[in-house]
Length: 419
Ligand SMILES: Cc1cc2nc3c(=O)[nH]c(=O)nc-3n(C[C@H](O)[C@H](O)[C@H](O)COP(=O)(O)OP(=O)(O)OC[C@H]3O[C@@H](n4cnc5c(N)ncnc54)[C@H](O)[C@@H]3O)c2cc1C
Image (spheres, rainbow, N blue to C red):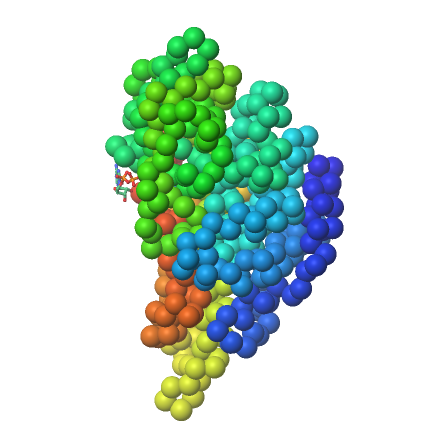
């Protein structure tokens, strides 16, 4: 019911749509049809195909034409994101009573895959924002949900997820940012590193230490940008993800009302990890979109580029490489969708499956984009050609939301616990 209401909103607002293929017209290459075997709508319900189309159309019309400029000028496209939110993409898996679209994790993955064909970096930020909105919706009380979620779902306010610190990355449970209770406020001191959106966003979902060492001493607070004692580091210079700022977030005697705590004291690490399970599917979905676009760009390039008197598409070596790319793409998509279903159903294998999907898909999709770049020869290395941006933008998906080494730890732990 909630899903159909959200869908109605999505479809109505998406009626401006034109054909999804525009995203593939980079560099004047002639577009050919999307081969049925890699069609991302394969196996979806009619409803899912509808919002997938809306997302592809949005990617083609509102993102792809600007993705190179957003990257090169480091523009955070807030207006475009607010337009995406009008389609229901600001709180895709947030409950409708606070402005969300109430869709499933699988639906969410389908949407992020489609959007990222138009700009991976922007879509990845939207995915982090969605994760924060879901955390407030799920672990907040009604007052907190009503205060924050509507503005987050419309993207009038933007959110950041603050876990990593200069001294705690993979070992996130060792974080040091302290929150000492003083009357009806927590006084925060410490700093967070690499925060996506940091400095440009309004709402910071912060994991901090209210108790002893380890995960059980961590709580989760919502910190508003205007709070005294909150400041930001310089904007980081990155090789990709340039349409979203990354900054350190610094707390110096920053007083945050106790009423801004999500859940009970000591539940913060659990909340952070629950957010990341979905986050990992979302980030893997963003890699899928890039790989999908890269396969099509590579195929179209092979069909027009001539060497040794014939088009490159006649080379059996390159045909085999293209076939391997398409196979990896489809395998990756199946893994993401299986993990999304498992998370949606709350199955005990969900954490391991989300980690497997993140590990496999972000690695394989990077390899697909890298092979696509190789097929473009020297032109693939030029910023005039979109393939290099997909490659640069998805490289970080192997590092953040838990590195792919940490994914191996989680998977192994799950296997060994059940042996
Ligand atoms: C562009 C960008 C955006 C980000 N956005 C956010 C954000 O919005 N919010 C946020 O909280 N964080 C964010 N991060 C931080 C990101 O999650 C961390 O960088 C990541 O978790 C890794 O931590 P680290 O960089 O400290 O690496 P480290 O933990 O120091 O790891 C270094 C290397 O060693 C490996 N390693 C570590 N321990 C082991 C081990 N026991 N066994 C094997 N290998 C190991 C790691 O896998 C990695 O390859 C972002 C990072 C980047 C680059």
